[in-house]
Length: 487
Image (cartoon, rainbow, N blue to C red; front, side, top):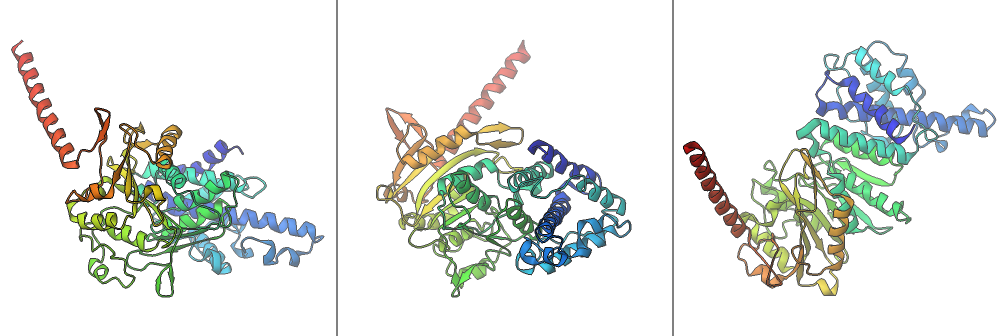
């Protein structure tokens, strides 16, 4: 199969389910079934290879060292195809048996979908779904890791497009992911962490970034935590589908119970990339006030918005000597008054290296403008005591309800970050002292050209200008309507 044929074949599984369950639930069933089929086909392929090598020795071909994963004979895909009643129960039992046979790598990976609820998925529907997947072999000879991994990413995007509001919880705009990865530029052997990893796109792209550059990507140490069970399972499957096996993704609440600890404190990482859930209201603020891991470095965020709880978790998890981070946020983190003191301390400690304003519609099902906040525990000498602001709101391609960064947009933003220079209407270097002169310590900058100098405009001033222009426009329109009425 070509890449396009593979993607069409996999998307066909969603068509089997269309009308029976909500689009937002497709991922709970299709991803586990796809992974189940892949495991079984690869196991069969490895079994045949070992059988040929041994001259037909069945016991030899069954040895675990010849297989990526163990598939018990009664739990194989082919056995499922023989079932015509209580199909969901058979699928569920087979998946659990495979998890038990591979406790170190696959425990819990198939999620907790309700396979036995016949009101949601009848035997007939499940039989159709199984037969759809059975049309092609998904072994390594027929579908290489790269090809299947790309198709898997395609499915994630299609489910995000199809499911609307549920998309943000497991999918980050891949063009933004590309930019974030290029800016962080992970090196072989480094540790990379995403505290709210969703389907694992940020972590995965760090490995693929190194591989595409011809560097040793298998030495990269990948760590992620995700609160949603099915989404964390999808992240793990995503890694395996791309042929990456050295990683640790753990399900759990990062703020309440951080998963990665060393000597009773937070594990430190070289690189952190994150797109945390924004403006969370239901979080344990009281516990954060007396956080046992010391994450309230700059203070305790308001109950109605946990954004800076995540940002402080990121900072506390960075390697003290060379840790660097990039996080994707709505613009509010740059100017909300309730968080001004935390921003002040962040600037006073000279942690912020760059702020990049991005355009609207880069979040799924939201028109909010977004920004990238970049921190660095080891700024280069020429960057100390300064923050680079990049105004890239216009570097964007709008498409229906979602926007994208095209390659030339990514290249321009990335180049500006690397150059760390003033560029009319696009980038400006502002000293920390200048930022701190603003009592609210706002980190949003609008760049204009005036007498060959780049000047700043505060958010309040911009809002005031916008309101004035809106009033003027309304007045003009009313006068126009009166004139037309008189005619």
